[in-house]
Image (cartoon, rainbow, N blue to C red; front, side, top):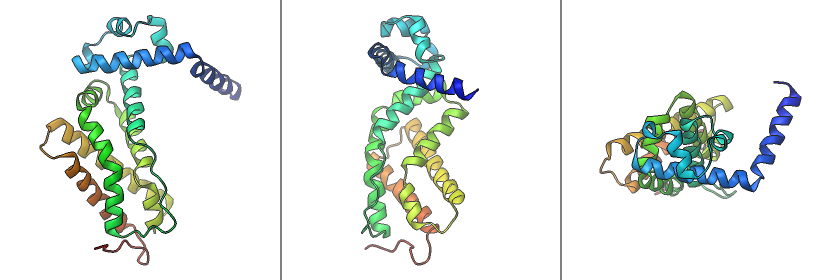
Length: 219
């Protein structure tokens, strides 16, 4: 694609997103899909039923999405983005002990885990009906960008590439634990899951810490 086409595409995207009609139709489609996924699996939702529920036309649907699976993946990522805001940077006087880091992760993870539990049906139906390699990569990349990048930066003795690998491993592992938890409906509470993730994060970050910066016991 030429530079001119990229610029034209970017301008078109911005102008559409600024169009109130475009935003209203997108919101209607997202609300309809969210409702439909509470009542049936994704592969049982037809475009006809989808656009009727949203009160829009087929051409309007295709202005926003390639197909229903694309709509489901994008809605899931959008909801995750809302539920998992970017973490506040550590303050200059933050003392990165194991106890302090554990509590920092726990507070950050718990609201997200509660959201996943509450919306369990939605996320599992998106995973089962629209999950693909690209989607999983997007979720892992999203989690890696939100899950403790500052902590790895503070503790790291490794290169940037190695830190990125560690954050991807942490994000991928967290995703796998959450999916297994949602799918098996374990009796584990969100509070217990947050503590498990926190313990794993502290272990990984400590393993990457310099000897002089290594998180200390904060008891």
